[in-house]
Image 1: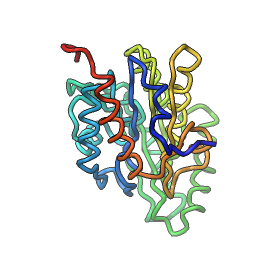
Image 2: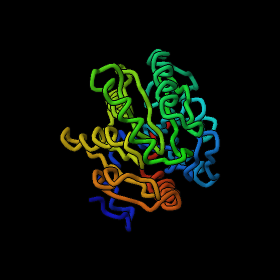
Image 3: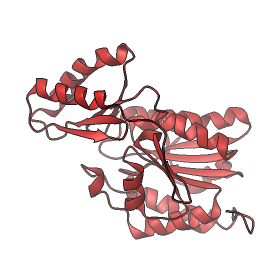
Image 4: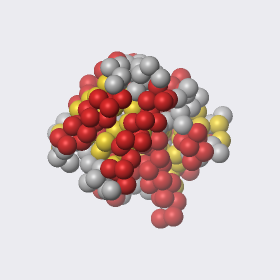
Length: 272
C-alpha cells in the first residue's frame, strides 16, 4: 500500500541524472472532468511545469486524451506530450507523430455494443487509433459497464483488440498500440533515464508505474505516486510507492520540486 507523501524529501532518491517526470492530466494536473475538453490546469501548476521543463532532462504529460488536446490544455512549452495512451507524441519542438494507424473496426464495434444496450445516454467517441464508450451518464452506470464488458471481452480474449478501462469509460485499443507503459519505457530508454517520478490516478497508469519502478533493478531509482481522488481505483494506490491526496497536493508537490530541486538539477548551459 502506498505511503502518504508527508515529506517531499522522501522523493529525493529518484532525482538522479538523467531525470524524468511523468504526469497524467485529468485527475492529476487538473480536477476530474467528464470530458477532456473541460479540463483546466491552474496557472501555478503551469508555472511549476515550466520551471521543471527547464531543469529536468524530461518532463512528459501522459494522457488518454489526444496529444494535441493535452498540449492545448496544459499549454507549457518544453514538455513532451503523449496522447491516446502513447499512440501519439508531440515532442519538445512541437512535432506530432502518429505511432499507430486508426482501426475503424473498433469504432463500429463500440457503436454496436451501445446499440445492444439501448441506452441513449451512452456516448461513443472515436479516440485516436481506437474508440471509447463513456458510461458515466447511463441510466444504471455500473450495470451498463458490466454489460458492455460482457459483450466486448470475448473479442479481447480472441486477441482482436485490447480493452482499457479509464474513468467511467471503456476503451477499445489496437493490439499494436504501446499503451502508457510501452510509451514510457521507450522514453526511459531514449533519454537514458536513471531517476524518474510518475504521477497517475488511473488503471491505464499501472503499466507505466511498473516501468518506472523497474529502474531500481537497473541501477537507477523510479517512484510511482498515486493521486487519490474519488474515482481512483484501489489497484492504483495498492501498486504505487507513495500517494498524494488529489490535485491540490499534486500542485504543492510540483511547486516544491520546482523551487527546491529545480536549482539543484539545473541542466548544464547549452543543453536543450
